[in-house]
Image (cartoon, rainbow, N blue to C red; front, side):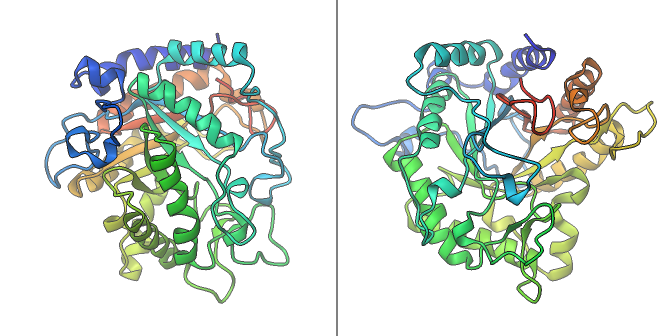
Length: 399
């Protein structure tokens, strides 16, 4: 068992009490939903999933709402490259064939050992979009999501569904020289929301009945290193980003997927970007009415007593958590939670210098310290990168 896997197992044992303790045993076993044969629980208020939206200004009854878990990056094996990045191929087949019962039994055993309370499922967008941008069901990725939902429902685990990128069928045309990494914003936010996002989530909720999927994030680390861009002379990227959320929320409501069933997650960026609040305030815009949770990522953790290193930008854990605590307060004042969808450190190396560094014992202890101190400032969930990983793409991240 890897050091990082032992960490997740031990942290899950500790945090499970805080995350799941208030629920009755029956609700814990079914993911918080009381099943009634022949009835759709999302349409029955008596069976409503405990809301993760809170009364503004009220204290959080369960600060660690969803516990510790990991990212399940189902982009791997889809082929091509992540955001046109030739250095990030997606052809590694890390997930077994669904007919391989023995292999999936091993995965189930690993999940039972670690007991994650939170899983971020990375659904590749392009296999689910037709050339005209309409949603396409029936993929192996959705079948794997359905399998994972079965485990999650039995074990009180919450799934954040995340496409990571805008599907190519909806992107603005990329520039002639896109650079090393490029994923463009949706050229028409309303069409993207109406033809892709809403049908996807309605299919997940209504057709597949995946009860554990309670959140959706469209873009991973937007406005960073070439991801989520608007063309030169096009709309302001921050206004367009907020507009995307406005259109998604409206389309989901029309599709019968209310925010109490699937809430949108905003930000999903590095801690120091402060949820893009300065950029929003400068423009007089606000994403808050359209989201139900916020997300940040940590990869710059280092122990407070250690100096900076060459090759990676890091900050003392104390400084990062002080900044994070203020963001938690901002979210709480609006009745929403802040989650750490990705939790790690590049202090001891990463794919650009020492790929093994992210899996070292020192890195594992650093991340564990970050998780504990993140709990103390009120973060609601933590996701390690990543459950299954070939370890030859972005570092030795495989749990």
